[in-house]
Length: 485
Image 1: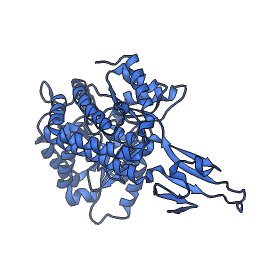
Image 2: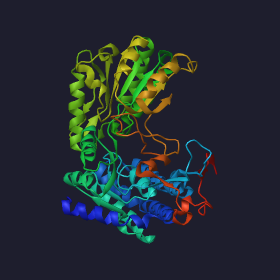
Image 3: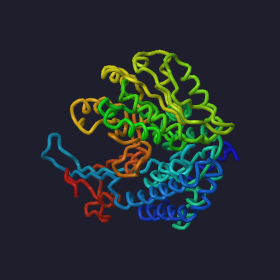
Image 4: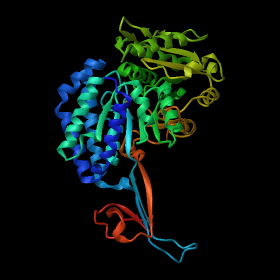
């Protein structure tokens, strides 16, 4: 099942040859909708295959499949509307200094996109997921390196996407799947691959990112690597609703056995009575969570070792001890530490690194200065959350929001980061190591990763693409001489 270098080459060349077939936007949109329909129609088989390989459960997987189909339909609408082409037309203007020539700008597909599937989302961030959907929407063929944790699910989903392509007269090679570690390395190095999308570990993502940059012709590498997803709880918030915050935190950090990329893995909570009530509620919530199965034994072993290493640090307590729950399961828990231990570089820095699984770290602070000192040491994140009291919607809360904003791509107030709405205004990305670029992998603007702008200067009307012609035969939204039309 492991793809050879020759098989990688054949898959990429076949994908490259299919580029022109994806040029028709109407066909692309119809293809995406049909793919969504086929996936939804095969729900029973897809969920059964995914559950057998991941143990994520039918309820979770059924919801994930619905989200995956919705993503495909949403990108079909993006393609039909055409605003993603970002068309600008500036007519010749000799009165300017210097004079303007006639300029017409549009975004075009990059070419073949390599997609590296995620372990924890066998549907929404894997073969039929957001990277694939957005790349196809942009007009780019896709070669997916399947994740080894769910190969059968990957093949089943790929067959549905390829069937949808054929139904609309497209080559089935607009989507293909490869398996194997070496295949993944060969894929990012292939000269006909024009961009890559990745969801996974910092170590694996950084290695591929470096390989993409080291090519004779470097390519964009949009990687989602890791995130701590910090939460700051103000003292007033803990006093007003500490029990509610503790219960919400427990539910969020244990969701999916703590295997969500948006799991809140680090919390700054106040010392004192209000913080104690929060921790009591968190203890009750986490203690009531049963042991869970992680995606594979490698991840389980890393979790058990990671929490043991952290728990052994000085001044670290374990109100609920996380770790091995059984031969194949893990138990949820959390650690506490004085925030002052994290204000400077030292052995406690491990507490500021993501630990994949059902655990979070609660750092108890005594002052706002400690909060600021710890936040200044945090790496980039997908999310950052601020829990405030009802009367704190200004003043100090505004200052905390300013401190959190540089740390993440999505900043929440009085919510929990698990759960990523597939909406046009969504941003799922963040400063490194959360991602290797400034783009999003969720929402309508994810399509921008697979496009590049081209300007045509002083080009005769007959030679222009239809999208840029003066009479706008396709009826696309455009900005002409600075005005949206």
